Every structure is written in C-alpha cells, then in structure tokens.
Amino acid sequence: MTGPPPKPTQLKVLEGNPGKRPLNENEPQLEPALLRPPKELTDARAKKEWKRVAKILYAAGILTEADQAMLFGYCYWWGEFLRLDEIIRANNLDVILVERPDGTTTVKNSPYALERRKSFENAINCAKHLGLSPAERSRLKTAWSEEDEWETFRKGKSAK
Image (cartoon, rainbow, N blue to C red; front, side, top):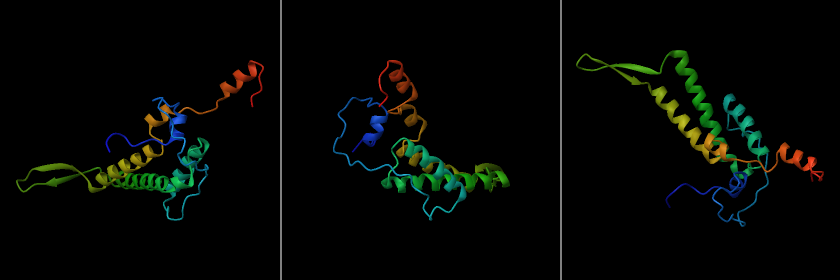
C-alpha cells in the first residue's frame, strides 16, 4: 500500500472533507473519552503533556479509549525529548570534540543530541497520527463556533 495512511472519518469531518470523497459510514464510532495518564507514564513532564493534549483531543471529540497507546507514545517520547534536552543544556553536550589519529579534531553531535533528535522525531510521528501537527491542525474545522450561534441568533432562529 502506497501513499499516506488513511485518515479517520472524524478527522475528515473536522477538516470539512476537503477531498469531497464519500465518508466511511461503517467506520466504528467510539465514544470520546477523557483518559487519565496510565501508571506506566512515570515522567512528570510526560504526564503534564498527557493532561494538556488529552483535554484538547477530548474537546475536539477525537480522543477515545482506542487512542491510549498512541497518546502514550506521543507523551512518552515528548517527555524523553525534554529530559534529554535538560541534560544537554545543563552539561553543554550538544556536540563533542573527537580527536582523530592524524591529530585533527572533528566536531560531532553527542550521543545525547542524537537520542534527543530521535525522541523528537518519534513524538512528532505520534502527534501526526493524533492530528496534532501544525499541518493537521490548520485543516481542522470545528462543527460549532460562537459565530455560527451568533448568526443563527441574529437571524431570529433558535440556536438548537
């Protein structure tokens, strides 16, 4: 299978179905759920991110019990990125100097910096699957807005 992975119907609806393709009416509909961080998520920064993002996804109606593993992955890798970034900054470990056999010195990324980059890439990959990347977010449209309700009210119609 080539091309981008298929998007959940709920995300397509929030985006306004830009491709105008028929929506999958048989896709399982799971109830939105505001999930608590699992006990396996031990890093305080990762838990804080879980609580922040879970509220956002729940408010958009796209966080369900089935999304727990993906949200865990995102928060775990985000916490790992922040942990490694703290170590790098505190110890000035962005780069290391490596002396070569010929006497010259080469500047290389430290192992910490490489792991930090991998952690960030993993977090971003999970975020995309949850609809959290800037590109994904810019395409989202909520089903309701204050302007819609105001326009309905202004025209003298019931908001419900």
